[in-house]
Image 1 (cartoon, rainbow, N blue to C red):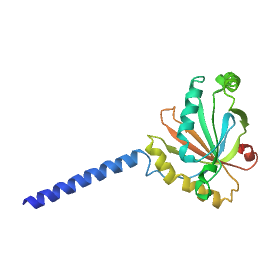
Image 2: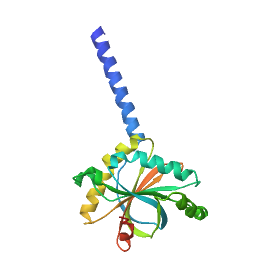
Image 3: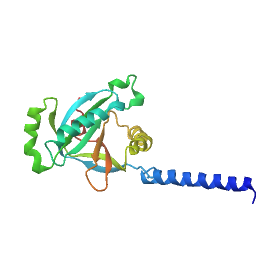
Image 4: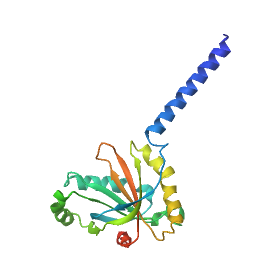
Length: 199
C-alpha cells in the first residue's frame, strides 16, 4: 500500500469518526426525535408570574433572575413560560410578549403570599384546567434549545395554522429538576383557554 492510499484511508477513518461523534451527539440531544402534538389537558396551576415585553433572544437573563429569586424561598418550583407571539411574524422583535414565572407544590403554597409581598413585580393568577395540544422534548444541555427552535417551534406554527387557532399562546413547562429532564409544550384551546392570556 503506497503512502497516498495510507493517507486517504486515514482521512476517511477520521471523517467517519467525526461524523459518528456528531451523529451520536445529535441523537443524545433528541435531534432524531419525532415531534408530534397530541390532544391532552393542561393545568390547573396557581401561577406566580410577571409580564415581559422584549425579544425572546434575551430571555436568559430573566430566567436566571427568576431562578435565583424563587429557589431562595421554594424547594421545588415548577418553572413556566407563556409566549404570545411568533417572532417571525413580528415587525419589531422587541415587542414579543411573555409571562414568565412558576408554580409550586401544594405543600409550599403557604409561602406564595410572602414571596409576593417581597417581590412587587410578580402577580398571582389561577390557570384552570384546559384542553391542550401537547408534546415534549428532552433537555440534555443548552444545545437542546437550538434543536427545540428547529424541531418544535415550526410544528407549533403548523398546528396553529391547521387548527385555525387565532389567537393562541404556547405554554412551556421546564421540567429540569426531575431525573428525565424535559420541556413540555402546550397550546391551550377551547373553553377557558382565554384565561391564559395575561396581557
